[in-house]
Amino acid sequence: MKKVVATTKAPGAIGPYSQAIVAGDNMYISGQLPINPATGELAEANIQAQTKQSLENIKAILESEGFSMKNVVKTTVLMQNIGDFGAMNEVYAEYFTEECPARAAYEVAKLPKGALVEIEAIAYVK
Image (cartoon, rainbow, N blue to C red):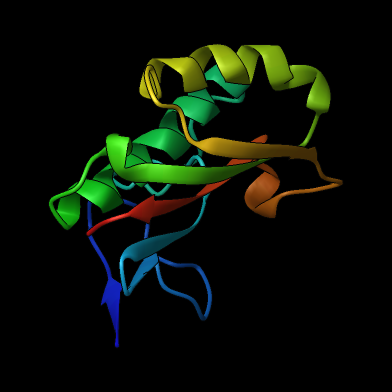
């Protein structure tokens, strides 16, 4: 069985996908752009603000089901510029302080809405 997860505390899907899906013992969180759910606008045009907003969106999705960032076991970070890795990592480290999840980070040619970062996550939720 799978359960679709949706919360108004994170941006709604901008296409035919779900914010997250719980399947078995895992929650699969779709890539979160740095969109402020209250305004529908991108966070400030710098990697720190956008990383923070993407992670806040992931946090809101997890919390909507009673979980936290401690449940995250894997993330994928997509960045418009891999040169932003260090600045992104500083903010990322504020959200994952112990037993950090596995992670991959990539530079991509372009992200939706001109975002500088997009982050997806998998959480263990049993």
